Length: 614
Ligand code: NDP
Image (cartoon, rainbow, N blue to C red; front, side, top):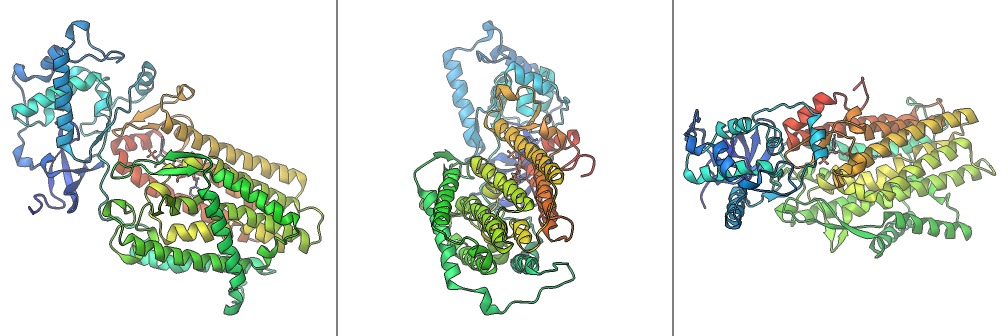
């Protein structure tokens, strides 16, 4: 087997997929299995290229001038192709014959196939006049290595500008001159090229503090949950009043574990019911798309019915409150066992099914972040199931149990106003997530993170047992609030929810159908992937408006607990830290995906989450 030709760190010339344009790139890694080099363009874009698409710098001669016969602009004027309905369509007299057109198509196909096995060319973006206007609202910067804009800018720039870009680097062979001609004639077609989906290679940039950080988090996360629950049980849950440790045997009860298992498998049964539509997820690195059944909301309705039946038959739901710590321990033990299972099975998973973020080769790191991207048993997707079902629906059930426990313990005929607010706000949040279940398919959790301890523990322990902390706190620490205060908190929650929902919907709708007439007033920056980056509307306000809305809601969930202790504010403090960290991770990924286009977006929208603050 031939060894690799280019070393890591070497600066070479890499061909931009589907074109004859070569740019200076740096080799960052090599995939021995797929025989692909990962290269980084100057604008930060990373792509996987075949060796044949990489040349040493010395093999290039800078072209100062060209003979008139080979001028792309001249050739273009004689051979540019017709595209009816294209805004940039050429004059009738310049149409190609059918055979020329076929030839052209064959050549184009060849270019694409030659460029990379993994290259996906999609006709993603056919701008209408409307789109043109929207783009024209953007600054017309023409960075040389702005690969993000090459194709789209072709319709906006004068021929000379395109000629300059094309001439900057080119190979001298006639074969490639021909290709140049074809690509140049593409300037009227508005075809966006999707960059190569990378075959997963080793994760080089370790997050969460690397091996040491993830090792510590495996202990720190469960410890935090137990600390919070123990604190909540205290009469005086001040920070300095450290709770006494419970006897070990009091933490485990097989019956409780059995109830937990019953809950988990009941949700699994609901998930498997053939109700609800089946949708496709985003393309994986091998181009395949997984199918997902969207029936989380139905699962919620069925769960509500089941709980209603239990209550009707006098089942004491506050059993959950009485054994809360034991439930948390059961969930933690289960999530640990699940994580071990996930890691062991991931060792047999094919390379292409490993998570981009959890393939470092370090056991602890991969165990924590998740080695396999979409572990499935048949069509049962373990990660997708755990993300929204047992934990999230469980959170609402726990809140309800706390409400009933409060009524029972304090002998109330109706729950306290604080408890009603906390229950209603969080119910709205969970129902919203389940109603918009499809949106989860484009989140980092599904597309980037593997399924390992982080998500298993997060979904099954952290969400149900930490997010319900306010309701748990209120049972032991009754708090009275007045109606005007309750109204003010409700308004705050509604504002947060409005920002959160409209920002998420705006982006999701735009991603689903950028040409949606309802979004016609929004401007966006085009990128090489064919996707745009919104720069007006919510996404022009701050770079993560949905996080802002989420944080405002988190505050509204804590306020009904009053100001006696900081404990009920743990959620909002933790959540700000989580989202600031998540935002940084997302920025990093977006920078890699969109390169210079992302930088332009950041210039246009300077604040990340909080306007004028951060
Ligand atoms: P986001 O919904 O914020 O999506 C980020 C992605 O949106 C980026 O990767 C990019 O993806 C796209 N994007 C970024 N900027 C733009 C733009 N200007 N125009 C168009 N698309 C853009 O991701 P999250 O998964 O982090 O969050 C989803 C929701 O879940 C949020 O509301 C968040 O608050 C909530 N959340 C809640 C948590 C909880 O524990 N309660 C935890 C984490 C999140 P691309 O371009 O590839 O489409």
